[in-house]
Length: 261
Image (cartoon, rainbow, N blue to C red):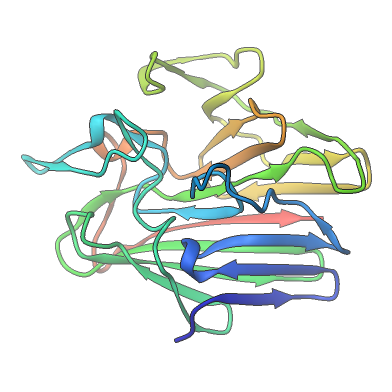
């Protein structure tokens, strides 16, 4: 086991994984161009890099998780809700090679752990995320939260091409109402399904990234001037309370995303 920064690379791409900051990709360069926003905003651990979201992605209403007749309280890290899981700001461990692991922690009601596998190839970066249960099963959703720079250091501006279907409507606190609609005009901080992958990020032709995933949902956030997010997720927000996958010792939840250039 190691701690600190782990660097994985190919001839064109370099990925730095910050174990102390949620096992996140702290830097991702292609031919020397940094594509991620690499600094936190006001010390906010949710505002930079690309971090795995587990064992739930997005918000949980009022931080309350109800399952099998029991009610559990999660931390309110985006009051009045809980958001983005338990591992994005925890210490991860490097098991060796390109495999990383993190316990789900005491704030999650059930014992389990997350695994992330980072494969840096010559033409693509592939990420695999898993959630495992040690004993009693539990509901889970997973995904990734990358912050892509809207402007390269050489000046090129980002554009985004996303073919998405239905958009979940949100209430005034950002939670899904249960209703779906055709995509509303941008900017977005919204969850979509019926995604026609890939979603393409283009920095004025200098760099182009095609995001593919086996996830059925994506959250797109393009409301900030300095960075945008394209977040593959296995389920919409608050799904752990209704319709999320059930994880058991024999049935982990697994998702992948590939960023090709």
